[in-house]
Length: 169
Ligand code: FES
Ligand code: FES
Image 1 (cartoon, rainbow, N blue to C red):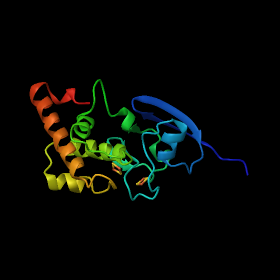
Image 2: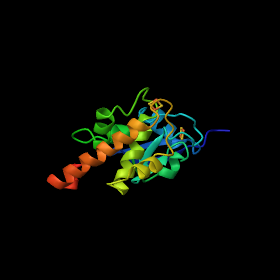
Image 3: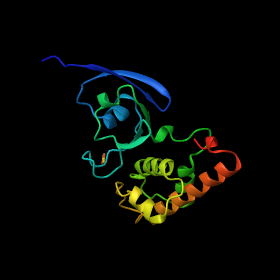
């Protein structure tokens, strides 16, 4: 049987891309193997760990649970696209508060945190923990990740007070 290919187009990190792929290809594999965006990690491939989290039309999704064809026409942001002209506050937070050790969960944790803060700029600690409960981290014990997100929230708040929220990418 010849392979049946379908063409998908989407905008990834601001760039329009088009590829002919098998319809069964998952978004996470599309990003990593077709586009070379290996910052999106694969931990479990079964929607348990959150390492593959990206933003799909602004919503945090586990890219191992989405077919690439389901993202046809959509806008996708991966960890490679998180920073703009400077580090995203979430990246600054993880750096400042040592929110990572081995780094395996980090891209997914950062994308999840960025989504959380886009929905709730001033989360309580409980809301941060709840927002990140789809992210499994084997290293940090989560404390430094929570502090990183709190730091990011404070930075975003400072920026919006001094120069407007549009300065935060
Ligand atoms: Fe997608 Fe684990 S690789 S949730
Ligand atoms: Fe190692 Fe989270 S930093 S799994």
